[in-house]
Length: 170
Image (tube, rainbow, N blue to C red; front, side):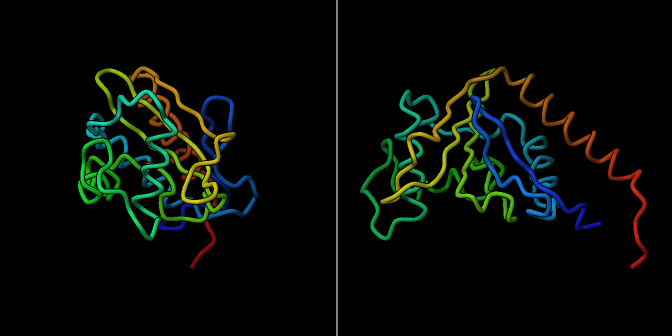
Protein backbone atom coordinates (compact mmCIF):
# COMPACT_ATOMS: atom_id res chain seq x y z
CA UNK A 1 0.00 0.00 0.00
CA UNK A 2 2.84 2.44 0.70
CA UNK A 3 4.05 2.31 -2.92
CA UNK A 4 0.67 3.30 -4.41
CA UNK A 5 1.85 3.15 -8.04
CA UNK A 6 4.79 3.67 -10.30
CA UNK A 7 4.46 6.68 -12.59
CA UNK A 8 4.94 10.42 -12.57
CA UNK A 9 3.39 13.42 -10.88
CA UNK A 10 3.49 16.78 -12.66
CA UNK A 11 1.93 20.05 -11.66
CA UNK A 12 0.87 22.53 -14.36
CA UNK A 13 0.86 26.19 -13.34
CA UNK A 14 0.58 29.21 -15.58
CA UNK A 15 1.19 27.20 -18.76
CA UNK A 16 4.36 25.56 -17.42
CA UNK A 17 4.87 22.02 -16.14
CA UNK A 18 6.86 21.12 -13.04
CA UNK A 19 8.12 17.61 -12.30
CA UNK A 20 9.63 14.81 -14.34
CA UNK A 21 7.48 13.37 -17.12
CA UNK A 22 8.81 9.84 -17.41
CA UNK A 23 6.75 6.65 -17.15
CA UNK A 24 8.62 5.39 -14.09
CA UNK A 25 9.78 8.67 -12.54
CA UNK A 26 8.65 7.81 -9.02
CA UNK A 27 6.46 5.78 -6.73
CA UNK A 28 3.51 8.05 -6.09
CA UNK A 29 2.97 7.53 -2.35
CA UNK A 30 4.72 10.77 -1.34
CA UNK A 31 2.82 12.92 -3.84
CA UNK A 32 -0.49 11.25 -3.00
CA UNK A 33 0.06 11.68 0.74
CA UNK A 34 1.31 15.26 0.34
CA UNK A 35 -1.88 16.22 -1.49
CA UNK A 36 -3.81 14.70 1.42
CA UNK A 37 -1.80 16.82 3.87
CA UNK A 38 -2.42 19.96 1.80
CA UNK A 39 -6.15 19.22 2.00
CA UNK A 40 -6.06 18.51 5.73
CA UNK A 41 -4.18 21.76 6.39
CA UNK A 42 -6.41 23.89 4.18
CA UNK A 43 -6.09 27.56 5.06
CA UNK A 44 -2.95 26.99 7.17
CA UNK A 45 -0.29 27.60 4.50
CA UNK A 46 0.24 31.20 5.48
CA UNK A 47 3.21 33.54 5.66
CA UNK A 48 3.50 37.27 6.34
CA UNK A 49 5.40 37.77 3.07
CA UNK A 50 2.89 35.91 0.86
CA UNK A 51 1.59 39.19 -0.59
CA UNK A 52 5.03 40.30 -1.83
CA UNK A 53 4.30 41.32 -5.42
CA UNK A 54 7.63 40.04 -6.80
CA UNK A 55 7.37 36.24 -6.84
CA UNK A 56 11.01 36.03 -7.90
CA UNK A 57 12.07 37.66 -4.63
CA UNK A 58 10.17 35.02 -2.66
CA UNK A 59 11.66 32.23 -4.80
CA UNK A 60 15.21 33.56 -4.38
CA UNK A 61 14.81 34.06 -0.63
CA UNK A 62 13.50 30.50 -0.31
CA UNK A 63 16.42 29.03 -2.26
CA UNK A 64 18.91 31.17 -0.36
CA UNK A 65 17.69 30.31 3.12
CA UNK A 66 17.31 26.60 2.37
CA UNK A 67 20.33 25.91 0.13
CA UNK A 68 22.95 28.67 0.38
CA UNK A 69 26.01 28.31 2.59
CA UNK A 70 25.74 31.96 3.60
CA UNK A 71 22.38 33.50 4.39
CA UNK A 72 21.10 37.05 4.46
CA UNK A 73 20.48 38.78 7.79
CA UNK A 74 16.74 39.09 7.17
CA UNK A 75 14.09 37.88 4.73
CA UNK A 76 11.08 40.17 4.41
CA UNK A 77 11.75 41.35 7.97
CA UNK A 78 12.14 37.80 9.33
CA UNK A 79 15.30 36.14 10.60
CA UNK A 80 16.59 33.22 8.53
CA UNK A 81 15.20 30.77 11.12
CA UNK A 82 11.78 32.47 11.16
CA UNK A 83 11.63 32.61 7.36
CA UNK A 84 12.75 28.97 6.95
CA UNK A 85 10.08 27.96 9.46
CA UNK A 86 7.45 28.66 6.83
CA UNK A 87 8.90 25.79 4.75
CA UNK A 88 9.69 23.31 7.51
CA UNK A 89 7.09 20.55 7.26
CA UNK A 90 4.71 21.91 9.91
CA UNK A 91 0.99 22.38 9.19
CA UNK A 92 1.70 25.83 7.73
CA UNK A 93 4.44 24.46 5.43
CA UNK A 94 4.32 26.61 2.31
CA UNK A 95 6.58 24.32 0.27
CA UNK A 96 4.39 21.91 -1.66
CA UNK A 97 7.08 20.28 -3.79
CA UNK A 98 9.49 18.67 -3.82
CA UNK A 99 7.68 16.40 -1.42
CA UNK A 100 10.21 13.69 -0.71
CA UNK A 101 10.12 11.57 -3.82
CA UNK A 102 11.90 11.61 -7.16
CA UNK A 103 9.01 13.19 -9.08
CA UNK A 104 10.64 16.61 -8.81
CA UNK A 105 14.27 15.73 -9.44
CA UNK A 106 14.11 18.21 -12.33
CA UNK A 107 14.82 21.04 -9.86
CA UNK A 108 11.19 22.16 -9.60
CA UNK A 109 9.69 23.87 -6.60
CA UNK A 110 6.09 24.86 -5.92
CA UNK A 111 5.29 27.17 -3.03
CA UNK A 112 1.68 27.48 -1.87
CA UNK A 113 0.26 30.30 0.22
CA UNK A 114 -3.32 30.51 1.51
CA UNK A 115 -4.20 34.21 1.41
CA UNK A 116 -7.75 35.00 2.42
CA UNK A 117 -10.06 33.23 -0.02
CA UNK A 118 -7.26 32.72 -2.57
CA UNK A 119 -4.32 30.38 -3.01
CA UNK A 120 -1.11 31.78 -4.45
CA UNK A 121 1.15 29.31 -6.23
CA UNK A 122 4.73 30.27 -7.03
CA UNK A 123 6.54 27.68 -9.12
CA UNK A 124 10.07 27.71 -10.51
CA UNK A 125 13.15 25.63 -11.16
CA UNK A 126 16.48 25.98 -9.42
CA UNK A 127 18.83 28.16 -11.43
CA UNK A 128 22.35 29.23 -10.57
CA UNK A 129 23.81 31.00 -7.53
CA UNK A 130 20.85 29.89 -5.38
CA UNK A 131 18.43 31.84 -7.56
CA UNK A 132 15.42 30.74 -9.55
CA UNK A 133 15.54 30.29 -13.32
CA UNK A 134 13.46 33.29 -14.41
CA UNK A 135 12.18 31.55 -17.55
CA UNK A 136 10.51 28.89 -15.40
CA UNK A 137 8.81 31.24 -12.91
CA UNK A 138 5.01 31.07 -12.62
CA UNK A 139 2.93 33.07 -10.16
CA UNK A 140 -0.83 32.58 -10.05
CA UNK A 141 -3.62 33.44 -7.66
CA UNK A 142 -6.73 31.24 -7.76
CA UNK A 143 -9.82 30.98 -5.64
CA UNK A 144 -9.23 28.77 -2.61
CA UNK A 145 -12.32 26.68 -3.29
CA UNK A 146 -11.23 25.96 -6.89
CA UNK A 147 -7.70 24.98 -5.82
CA UNK A 148 -8.74 22.65 -3.04
CA UNK A 149 -11.60 21.14 -5.07
CA UNK A 150 -9.15 20.42 -7.90
CA UNK A 151 -6.59 18.62 -5.76
CA UNK A 152 -9.34 16.74 -3.89
CA UNK A 153 -10.81 15.60 -7.22
CA UNK A 154 -7.36 14.42 -8.40
CA UNK A 155 -6.71 12.54 -5.14
CA UNK A 156 -10.15 10.90 -5.14
CA UNK A 157 -9.88 9.85 -8.80
CA UNK A 158 -6.37 8.48 -8.30
CA UNK A 159 -7.41 6.52 -5.23
CA UNK A 160 -10.51 5.11 -6.96
CA UNK A 161 -8.49 3.99 -9.99
CA UNK A 162 -5.72 2.55 -7.81
CA UNK A 163 -8.24 0.47 -5.86
CA UNK A 164 -9.59 -1.13 -9.05
CA UNK A 165 -6.19 -2.21 -10.41
CA UNK A 166 -5.30 -5.84 -9.61
CA UNK A 167 -2.40 -6.09 -7.17
CA UNK A 168 0.23 -8.80 -7.33
CA UNK A 169 0.59 -10.86 -4.15
CA UNK A 170 3.52 -9.92 -1.95
